Image (cartoon, rainbow, N blue to C red; front, side, top):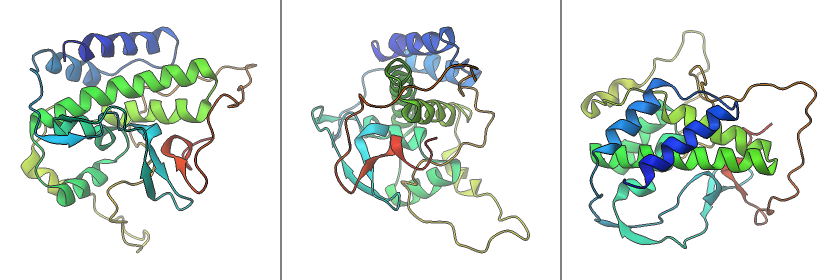
Length: 223
């Protein structure tokens, strides 16, 4: 983390400088905790760069493919858990762990600092390239990643399920762990500020997705 930690600090500072949002205290806690984090223990074959743009979903917002395997390596499983933080809600994380199994605190921290770094990088890239849908989803990913306290009681996370509100829908909660672009319920500290008189540039520079599939950054969460 000797490279990722300072790079993450740079990304958060640049986001604030551009007026895209101020990182909350939780984001700084993650960065400071990762300072003392040693090299992750390699125990699995990982994709190595599994972020918003590399998971494709179909027309029903279900996962359909993972692309760009150039960083395939033998590494810590935490390297591939970026979407655990940046895409899933608290409920989705509970369901993911039930299906996935045990995740160590070191793996969670590794995934979380990578989620901050990659979402920050994507938000800046989208801002400069005029890609509002990707920018919005990357900023929401930062919000989700930083919306919970650093210290996690993994034994009690099964109790995180929120009770169904009275009079609410009786429709069962989907069991899919990779829920497509859930909306964050926190205060969204990374949401961009509205600017009057400034139009949104087109996404002509964005490469078209493969037929029948689209990147999660262009899902129904986009504008």
